[in-house]
Image (cartoon, rainbow, N blue to C red; front, top):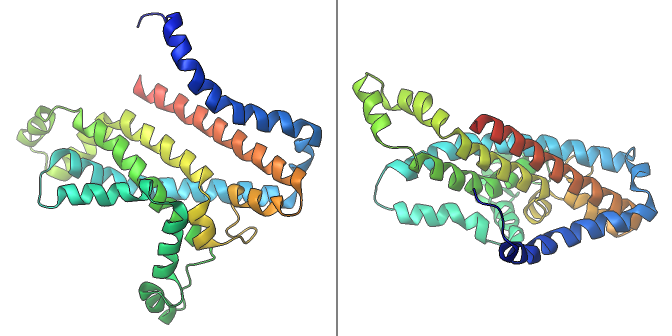
Length: 259
């Protein structure tokens, strides 16, 4: 790679400033409030643990759902493929609040699926399960998109060679394609997990705002803003720090696996 010239440094500067200004503004503004003294606050600890737990579970589910779908889109032609691609991309274009409302209308007490679940005494809205469902719905398309690019970059000759060597489709997918596409789906995991950490609208609409049950860090920030500004700023700093650390850590793992 060639060194970055002054022209491209100038072209890059507006974007860097646009991203860094809110981050720096939050950290600098929080200093007079001494946000570290709130780290032992019960609300902060519960929100951090819940956010990490639900984000991890949702990312793992999104990987299990998304990687096979990405492989299908990358390797097969079938009727309705274009329509399926539109459906997959919908969660990334719809407002999160609308997604949450749609999930609530499906799984709610009077929803067509919620009524069936009520027979067995199962309730989804306003629970931790609702948080995970909302996160999976939002994160899976990102993982599919990243993984699909990885599968498409692998020459089909590898699969043909594996098939001629006696492997069936499942063995070829599991032993050849998934390992070779690992850098791509690791990038997808990074995007999915960090999105889960920041998800707000769908979670609030579908899972509510119950401390220790459905109050994730972004929801806790909104809740604290109504009564305790220093606490809200502290939670916001914790949330942003967690996102930065998670992104840096996952990028490091991704680079190690890529090499």
